[in-house]
Length: 180
Image 1 (cartoon, one colour):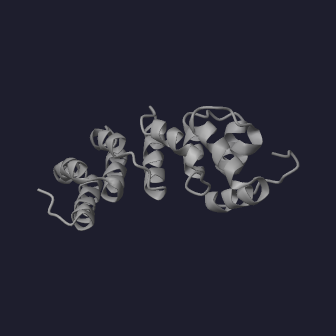
Image 2 (cartoon, helix red, strand yellow; image 1 turned 180 degrees about the vertical axis):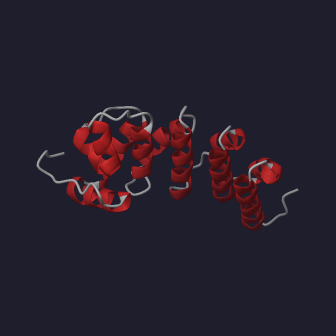
Image 3 (tube, helix red, strand yellow; image 1 turned 90 degrees about the vertical axis):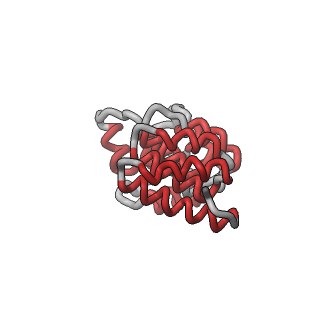
């Protein structure tokens, strides 16, 4: 990516990524986002494109933690290439919960066939990950996963129970059979 581009740091992620795609092409942006999701260093400018103002803070010395991987995954909501699917699949088992949650979002958006990996997230220690996995399986799962999602109807967290209920209804409708 050329160094003379001005990155709109305060723009929304969708707007920043749309601009990056116009400038560099969807394949290049998705490829670099996949690499970032996998832990690669894709350079400061790319980090600014995908992370905006927050990325500038990291470049100024704040700890990166898991944010570059999250931004790599989030970028795949806006720029896609099928070659990115393995990175998303691997990201579903990332140690950082925000990465797992974002990869489940990408799986929904891109209709990725990762039901078995998503089913493992139904028992995640983080409620937001369990809820997103239930949502994803509502879109992508089959009857076997529907039974697992149904078990979350008694989860201690209301957001998980709500997501599970919506997903069980969606699965029953999509599969055209009751979930028992």
